[in-house]
Image (cartoon, rainbow, N blue to C red; front, side):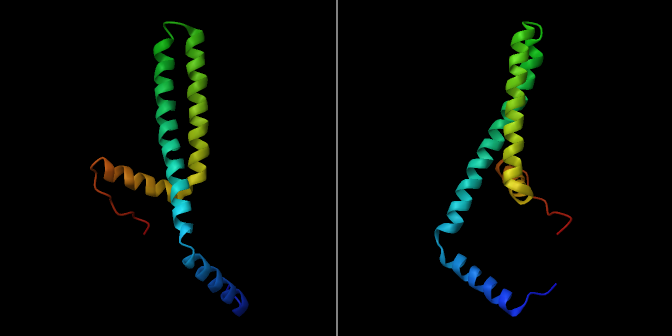
Length: 111
């Protein structure tokens, strides 16, 4: 559905205001960077917690249960931050991780 002339004019005004705001992009980038760090850290914490859960089964079932609850909490934090990043943010995260660990970024097939 095409936009009316008034809607197009309002949209242009909003775009111009956003282009003139120098702090807008930095604010968004810093917030996503924090979310990415938490996402990676909580994902690693969840995996380590699950490994410890299995390893501690032979030592103490209570201690194993506590580590399982910790792993579950880390997984929930990871899921919450993955939702906040959204699909585009997760795609950017995976590309940056590939670049950081030496794998070449492959073009996506849906582009």
